[in-house]
Image (tube, rainbow, N blue to C red; front, side):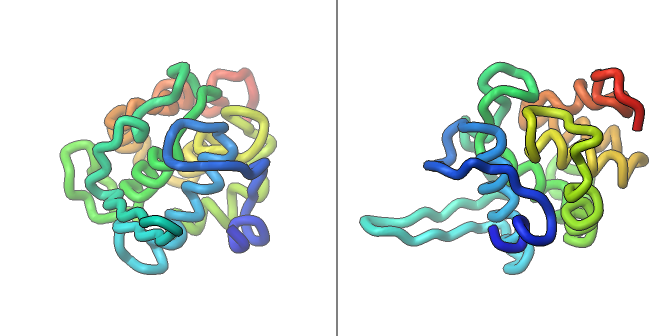
Amino acid sequence: HFFIDKMSHDDSPGGNHNGSRTDPLVAYCEGIATVFALMVEGNPIYVDTMTGGGLNQDYERAQLTEARGTSTGTLTGLVSENLVVAAIWDLLDESSESHDTLSLGDEAVMDVLLNYMPTYEAQNQGVAGADLADFIYGFRQMHPSDSDAIDRLLTQYAYPAGVAMASPDGGKGKTP
């Protein structure tokens, strides 16, 4: 969280998060922090220990219901941090599934975090504040030749960004 807050952009109001659908700002903040940890480890398996048990989640094989879509089918619907993690992990990891033909590596994710997200507000795509929609939009801007592959990946997660961001302005009448 510290890295994202200081070097990128974080608008999360904070609060409980357990993988279920939540405020897109919370989901993005928690999800991108997990992605950062997975990148450092070089492993899609997230382990968290807590009183009374723990969590062990393999995001390469995430079959969680909440890791699909938003509560309204729109960019402003509630979304799971698990969807954020699984989708961004698929952007960077080795392509190993039919929907995942991208293998852009940690550098591509870091490029968006460091060079796009700090200035994303001019092209805000989802809810007001930094969320997955803004990250995906920035990723598209930095990797336009991968747009079709990004669409296939997002379709797998039933995330609406593939349609909503087909135009450079995300359908909002803005100019890049």
